[in-house]
Length: 305
Image (cartoon, rainbow, N blue to C red; front, side):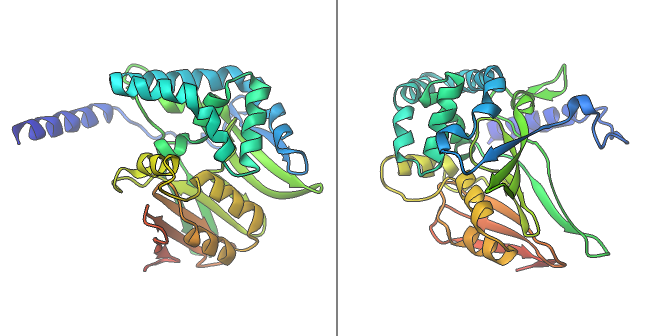
């Protein structure tokens, strides 16, 4: 008990230390042009292997740096985790054959365009299942206008740089942030905020339809790591969260259609989906566990359900 109390006190002290001299800035939005996020087009009429080359080639170095940091962070947890990283390097590429299309083809195309191994590219694309982060909101003002926003609270491994007041993972993800316009037949299908090289979607918007974002859910029996391992051992069928989000954005046309798809699809990781619509009251939080079929509405409109 004394050890637990000691750890809690240390964590509390660290939290207070990190919170010193924190100030809120004003007039920082919109950001200066030099820090703006690039926008690219992904043509869904192209073969999957050809869709992402123009996006990932200029950012190959940053993707490699992120993966190297991620793997080195894992290895800090000891010999067993080092064995996991070695297994990934030797075997993860084979998993591309088990992933659904068009995602498998797109991942193979990204590996080819960047010169990265297929194993590393697959690892990059299941990263969210292994370490879910992020928080977002949907809100409505007094005039019935809807707002959907999210932050970038990713973190893993090496943690917080006290000197520079930055987070390791966020700083390595920031240069990879891009906006993607998905096109088909010359028409815009949906827009999404992406990390270059990741073919799933964590935040997207369907024009005149709906918006959707993924949010961290923890404490669910080992979370996405357990779900992924069960899938790996053929003990579980399910969908990777980012793949489902993108599929919903590609195929659903309305808020109600998106809600039905998000609630009815078995997943490999627990998650909170936040969904926003076009009209007053169209906003909800969907809580999904690793138990198949257990995606429940937590909030809908302005009410708890």
